[in-house]
Length: 273
Length: 273
Image (tube, rainbow over all chains, first blue to last red; front, side, top):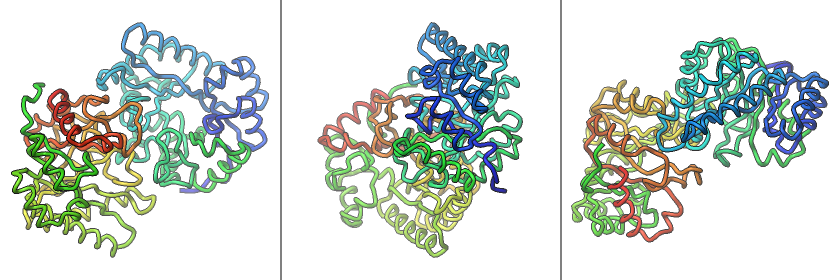
């Protein structure tokens, strides 16, 4: 479990610097020496795709991911089809940005039937995958924490995400592991090992005790209880060598000056990840 | 999936009527025709054990459980031993009340090592189990929702609880299933089936969307997204015929008149469970 000695794998997920535009985030990364960025689609829409592509290219930034596609389950076939079309636009954006992965947050059930909703996720991925493959975009299923099962994702364990990936057996489909969502899992290390060869992204942050807020209470690395280096070492051992995104939804952090946030995340990344 | 036609299995968990003393809760159950109650240890301490035993006996109430034992992991051996002794007092109270089970909320890790904390839970149960057996008290491991992994319980899935029960293979150890904690689990129905023969308690309530608060945001049955009857039917199919507790930590409900809460929970139990 060796600490990192440089930030060559560090990436800023735009969720961490919520008030910054894409231009500001790109310039912030340049100032802080952070070599990669994860781009959110709402920020992309503000900036425009052509301009966004130019910004990241001119800055020499790697795009570790686009956030996010998914949200497959819906009450009607027409609405499910509309979601697929929205996902296709997300794939096009990821392709234009040469992003390493399009992150899929799979969506909640439209009613009480979570089992049926999980089947809709599988059908949605089946519908989207050929489109992604044609455009050279990899799709990464991100299991969310089970506390989001009611409103954000019926896929809540790495085991489920792994099973989906294995069912499709496509090099264009993998998983994205975020420590906040998976740290609690008694099967964590076995599932990371099982994901060998199809980990497409890795996100770090921390779990604060007590939890300030389910959505906006994530912590900076080192401020919580997650065994970050142990998990990172396991992810490394599963063959993942790509970018490591810092993704922190936290109101207190959002209120800070962002150059300070980037300096802090760099320092904590070296100390704890 | 037949609905219930009577409330013969319904039990009031005292957490649902937070402001009521044990005497008030016992009298409330009598007025509402609810045949069982789950007693909390803080309420028991207020009333005194002798008086509590007399109250429930005179009212003819079944004691579905005592809440709660557990909290095994601690930083030092001395502190872990103190926790065992506290658990022994809880066993004594459950024995005096002829409670069907002592619920174990297993506790958080004293540091970042959740794997080590899980081993402390196993050691704690091993230390407590002979004492419980001698006094005729069954211990029920209640897995909590993973969002409580940092501050309340490192045991967060029915799979873990089942594995612990299987490891000890004692008729005095089983699981307590609470829908709030387990409804999200992709492995839910398989794990309920696996628990056949060792389910010692079943708790109902609901998961509201959006979640008002992790601790105090549970919903009344029917107000949320949990497939209550489907889960209850699975628990029945696993051979559980005991009391079904309504356990709802909810500030809005705590502010209501409690005879209304009992009438509502009775109505919703018949309609949704």
